[in-house]
Amino acid sequence: MAKLSKEEVKHVAKLARLAITEEEAEMFAEQLGAITDFAVQLNELDTTNVQPTTHVLPLVNVFREDVAVKGLDRDVMMKNVKEQQDGLVKVPPIIKD
Image 1 (cartoon, rainbow, N blue to C red):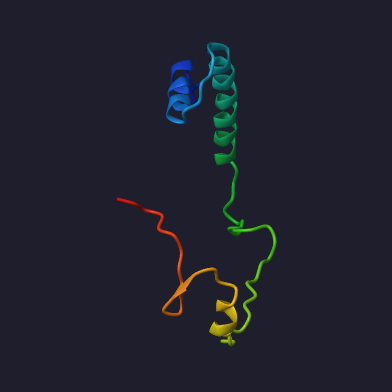
Image 2 (cartoon, rainbow, N blue to C red; image 1 turned 120 degrees about the horizontal axis):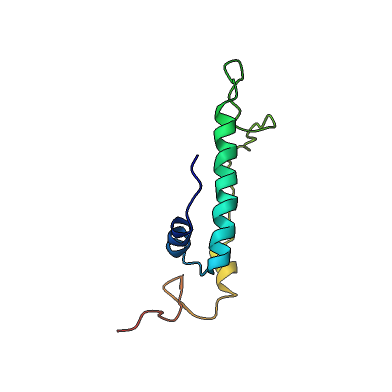
């Protein structure tokens, strides 16, 4: 694969809102070029008999039963509330006109 130019690296850095110097752009161009060359090497591997892997470990989701349980009694909970109105917790407004 072709080596990335400094201008391409600076463009990507600008899109990512990163400030880089000329020296950094040159260094990153070389490093990114090496990475893309390695990716090209990986494409040359024969993977015809290799099963696709989504994870290196066999993972199984473990779900618990979804059982409804009684929550706190409203009267008990409202004892800790500073202000209430009509059985609801009253809070100060956060959006003002």
